[in-house]
Image 1 (tube, chains in turn red, cyan):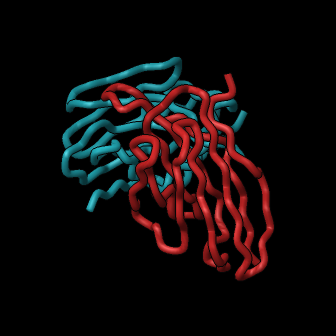
Image 2: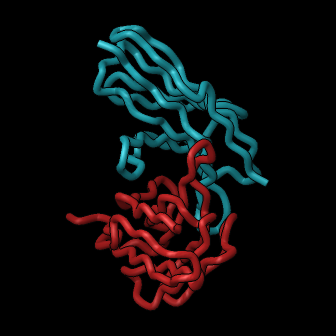
Length: 113
Length: 110
């Protein structure tokens, strides 16, 4: 089982460039999430989705957009990258019912110069 | 606004020296208190979920407990392979979104 797979694993962008991070899960999970992790700040929720075709804002959504066209994929876009978006990005997925945990991908380390 | 605070930020133990990690939380509509382990360069790995005050769960050398305001992760006779960052998170909202603490970096010396 692959679980949650993130692509790419590393990326360096110049300020103003755009890119898309891809998250794919093979567990048939309804819920998917994007978090960013910065030193000393823990993981913070960017956007999430409760099902195909639906998205919602999390704690730190500014500068990011998301799309969930297929149940197994959740895309995170940066339209015009800024140095403040240098971070490690984690995707997660879960089932909707109580008693189940979120599964995380291995992360994407993004540096904006 | 949900808040999760973990202490200490870092903890160094000798192998076999038991200790506890603290997680205090302020959440409206708690839908679970989660503990994760994170190794360097990897994503968080699930350890435990707790739902109600008084609940306890154990796995090998780890035991998690929950009160109305705090959760503790007790580590009994730790080994060097227990070295990692331990994350606490509360779940709330329609999608059980997680609010994370900043983690406790545990180092167990042989």
